Amino acid sequence: MGDEGISSPGKRTVGTAFWERGTDDVSPGREVNPRVKDIQVSRREALLGQAAQIRHGLRQGSNKPYKELIDICWGDAHSAGMKPISFVRQVLAACIHPELLLHGDRLPADARHRAQRLLGECNGGSVGSYTATSGLPHVKRSVAEFITRRDGGVRSLPENILICLGSQRALMLVLNLLAQGEGVSQTGVLTPVPTCNTVSMALAEAGVVTVPYQLCEEQRWALQTDELRRVLQVARGHCDPRVLYVANPGNPTGHVQSRESIEEVIRLAAEERLFLLVNEVDQDSVHAEGCEFVSYRKVLFEMGPPFSDMVELVSFHSITRGFMGEGGMRAGYMEILNMDPAVKSWLVDVLMCTDNETPVLGQIALDIMADPPRPGDSSHATYTEEVRSRRETLIGNVGRVQKVLDALPGVSCQPVMGGNYVFPRLHLPIAAVDQAKSVGVEADLLYCKLLLEEEGLCVGPGCEFGQREGTHHIRLHVMVPTEALDDALGRLKRFHLRFMRAFS
Image (cartoon, rainbow, N blue to C red; front, top):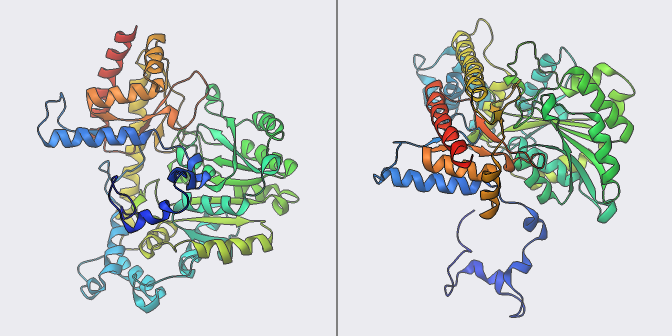
C-alpha cells in the first residue's frame, strides 16, 4: 500500500478527499472500519523500528559494543543467512528466463524438465500469466498426491485443495466465511495461548470473538481437552463458539501433539460440533527424538465413521517455513474436508474470487515442496544433502539454545519437539516487573528493548504471542546459521546476567 492518501497537515492529496466528507465535527478516525480498530498492532513493530534505527546508526559509524545487529525475532530463515534449496531456485530461474532451457549444461536435467512441464501448465507458457483463483490444476494435483503419500495412502482429492497466498491468507478466507452474528450469536474461535500474533490479528479483522484457551506449559505446552471444555462453557455466555483453531506443531511453543491428543480433540469437536482449523506449517520440522508428526486428517480418517464423515476440518500448510523457508514467495494451501457443498461453493466461487490468485512463482515452489526430486533424478542427491544439512543445523541449534538457557539463572524452557522456535520463560525480579509497569510496557518487552539496545540482538517478546498472566517469555528463531546463533547466544548470556544483577 502506498502513501498516496497520507499527507502532513496543510497539504491536500487526492486520497484525503474520502476523509473530508461529511460535517466538520466528524473526525476522520470515526470513519475507520471498527474491525480495523480492533486489530492490535504487533509489539514487534516497535522493536523492528528500534532495530532499523540501530542499523542506520551502525552504518553511520555510531559507537556500539557490537558491529552488526542480529535479528532472530521472526521466522525468516533466508534473511537470517540460510541458503535456499538449489533445485527450487534452478527451476524458478528457468521458468522466469526460459532461454536457460536452451543451454543443457547450465541446469540439471530434472530441473529443466520440471521447468518445461510447469511452463506448459501456464497460460501462454509464461509465469507472468494469470491462473485460476484456486491455483494451477497441476499444482493442486501435486499437493493432493503429497498429502496422500504423507498420510499413508489416505486419498486426498485435488478438488478439496485451494492454493492461497500463504497459510495466513488461507486462514483469513475461512474466517471470513464462518464469521456471523452479533452478541451471543457472534462466531467465537477457540484460540491457543500462546499463539502467533498474526492469528489474533486475523480474528480481529474477520470480526469474530477470540476465545483463548491456555496450553499447559508445565506439561510441554500440552493441549488439554479439559481446558477446551472449560472455555467453551464460559464463552457461551457472550458468543457462539463454533470454531477451534489448533497449531500443530505449535508456534511459538514447539509442542507436537500425539495421536492420542489429536483423537481427543477430534472427539470433542464432534461432540460440540466445532469446526476445526489446523495449522500444520511446521510439519516437516519435527525433530525431537521419538516424536513424529501425524496430521489431523490422517487421524480423522483412521477413526472412521461417524467422525470421518461429520467433523469439518480445514488444514493449512505453506512453503514459508520448514526446510523451504520461501516466505517471500507467498504460497500455501488449504485442504477442505466435510464442508457442506453449498458453503464450500461460497468459499471457492465467491471468496476466493475476491482475493488475488497466488503468484505463479510461489505455486511453482509449492509444487516442488509437494513433489521434490526423487531417487534416480539428477538433483536427488544434492537436494537430499541440502535438506539433511538444514535438519542437522536445526537440531544442533535447538540443543545449543537449550544448553545455554538451562545454565542461566531465572530462565526455564520446556523441551522443543518441533518447529523453528524456542520459547523460554523468564522468571524476572520484581524490580524489573515494577520498572516495566512504570514505563507502561510489559516486562518481557522491556527486556527485549534493552537487549536490542545494549547487545544488538533482536528477539520476540512473549507478550506478542499471549501468555498466562504473571508469566514472561521470549521467542528465539533458531533456523539460522550456527555461527550467527552462537554469536546471538553469547550476547543473550552477557545481557541476561547483567540484567538480573541490575534488578536483583
